[in-house]
Length: 120
Picture (tube, one colour):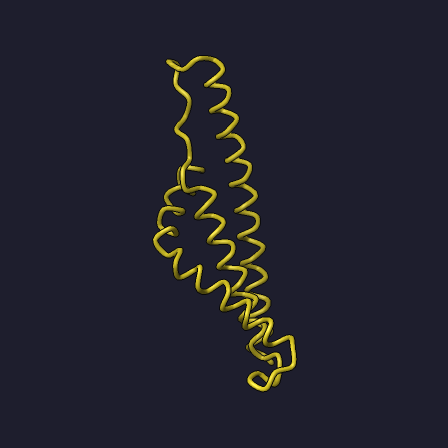
């Protein structure tokens, strides 16, 4: 699982500059929708801004977290290095499972927010 997440992270790393621009732009859009301003008189663009902010942060997190996954431990390593490598990979596996859960939650939140935004 973590090797697949590493391949996905390498693809995301190519788009990181777009995501670095999208995250603050969507945060500004959300803030502009919340406060009173003459450019956005209502909160019409707040839900797409929240969705864009969530996705950009999730993708940046996946790209950075799984950028370099250590290879599996080999028999030639000392027992301490094998233990250390196994613990690193185990922690990354747990973080990968948490990121999959977070991605599912953001997917559900996006669907609900955009469905609500389209109907209003």
